[in-house]
Image (tube, rainbow, N blue to C red; front, side, top):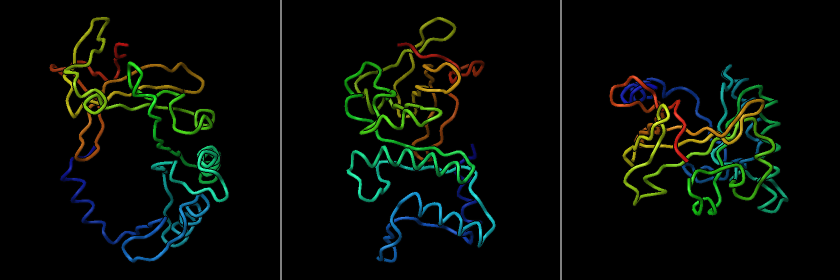
Length: 211
């Protein structure tokens, strides 16, 4: 990942590039197109037609906010999941969907969201090719000083800092899931990368954390 200074310098150098805001605008105080998958698709088509660019990756943050007309809130998430997969096929690009976990995950031992923890919908579990659950121990377990991981079959405590992130692969179609990984998070830039041991000889991104 690039450094913060690199991101800033490139952002300043590219301010003339087109920026599409889909949804309700707040800068011009006027109603824009509703945030629906059809309007997202139309905006991307317009962007491609006018500027010749097309997304290599589409990220929906977060799917519970997608508007599905004439649907109850609970049914909107299920329908949004179906339409999200259809949008990915129409655009022929990967689509990453972020979803809020239900409060019940706070009562589990690991506190990492699993397949059954997506708020309001099991449809996301059915439609997704891969499902990842993310958890920051500093937020979910603020009173716990360390988190145990397993390195080469031996327990290793990791300090519970603002930079520690745990990720669980809850679903991976066509292969085995269930692994958990320790990662490094920079909250200032949302940069996520491998977490290594002090001697840098071993990456903890490949280590199954203790259960």
